[in-house]
Image (cartoon, rainbow, N blue to C red; front, side, top):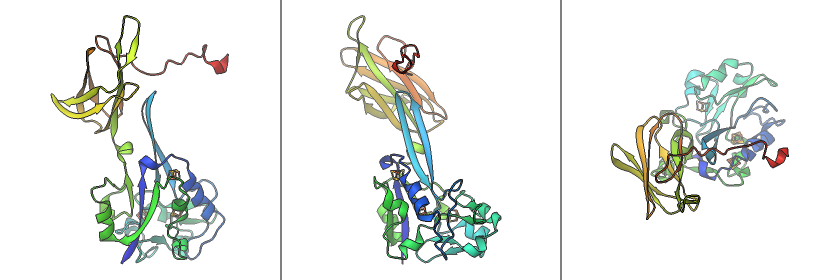
Length: 299
Ligand code: SF4
Ligand code: SF4
Ligand code: SF4
């Protein structure tokens, strides 16, 4: 039996919010009964864009991901609200619009926050995987069809085949796998892990700083190399992913003919930028110094 699955790649998403707007366009003002009543125009979303910022200027990583109903195979909402949830053969999970009307308690039936309350129609609602479109022959829901980067994709295949297809490719779910989610994410480490970044320079003479490109940089823990990277054209480096709260590390690099740098740090809850490393000098934090007096926009 073939079933619907959604996949999303964090690395492809530019955070344009077109998917969220497409969901609004499809469902605000449109009753797709018996699938679902219309979506509330404001203050209710069935697809919520989440954002995470890592790093320190100028080395910042900005990642986005859509959060929506996972159309769980073992749907906790169906167990928490018996009789209110329809689990279709093709994997789509729907709320029965008649049972959802006036049933505010249904919002709490989803432990993942995917069900919300529509004040306008007085009903609990959630993403339907655009079942009204798929049943009409569409190959993908509106949000997927609207994504200009193809970061969102829809797949219709047997569960075993889907598992085989995503196996070993780094896909993860954002809800516990025991729930049997049908929405899977790639490159999720940009939401769940930290990074260690920095820049390496050297002094060409007493006054001239030069960035150090193509330098091997090593990340060590307890004396052992745990990761290796190479500086960019601008002398910058990133170790990503690094497990949050994973203890003490040392960043080391040897700039051929110019000396070496070493920096000890502790990885806590947040990403670490070690700043600018230069042989023979103290590390310098690399925040942009913003001087409002010389800001051309204020002159
Ligand atoms: S994400 Fe929540 S609402 Fe959607 S199927 Fe799973 S438990 Fe039900
Ligand atoms: S699948 Fe349809 S209902 Fe669900 S978030 Fe996308 S557009 Fe909205
Ligand atoms: S439409 Fe695609 S690229 Fe734009 S925010 Fe949504 S998933 Fe990301």
